[in-house]
Image 1 (cartoon, rainbow, N blue to C red):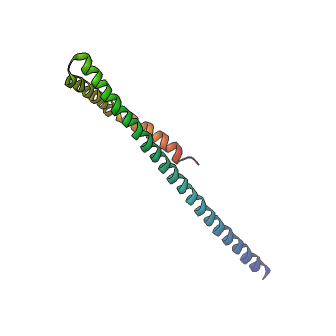
Image 2 (spheres, rainbow, N blue to C red):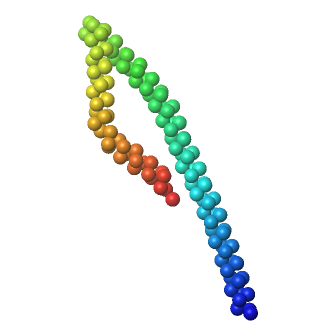
Amino acid sequence: MEFFENLNEASDKLGDAGKTYVEKSQEYYKLKVFQQVSDSISMITKIVIIGGLLFTALIFLAFALAIYLGDLLGSQSLGYVITAGLIIVIAIIFYISRRKIDNIVIRRMSTNFFDV
């Protein structure tokens, strides 16, 4: 009889240990998801704020360049056309290298996401 009591007690301990393991694993994954979500939201917020400010600065720089080129060439419209052409060339360069940009972003995000 003692054998069955010991077996029953051992199985109860094993069940408790399994239950504790599952609970701790759930807590860990909840914290991991919270960390990933908060990191992502923080990064998106920083990108929006810094990107918005840089975009505003680039707009002012583009207007300044257009006005400067217009004064230099004697035609404001020609200055704006040259500036627009320059921006289009830069956009095409970014479009051509979009796969490289994707790879860089994926590499950085995977480092944060799969950090154990």
